[in-house]
Image 1 (cartoon, helix red, strand yellow):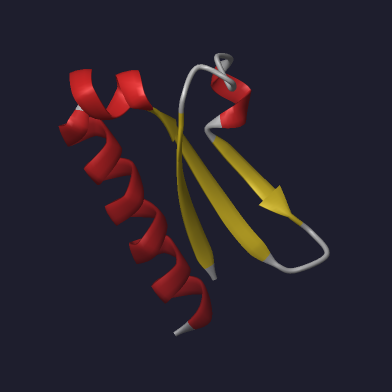
Image 2: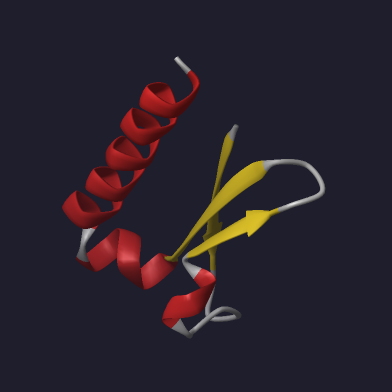
Length: 59
């Protein structure tokens, strides 16, 4: 399962963009408002690749 989260300036470091939540099995993708405003293609690509990878892994 994948979750998306848009955050304000509370998660400024890159290591917050993608984090797995082991207890629930969710892959969490976090994007700052700046990421979305200034690099929407990169955000969409990251989401698309994550979904495609999950589909390959879990069928």
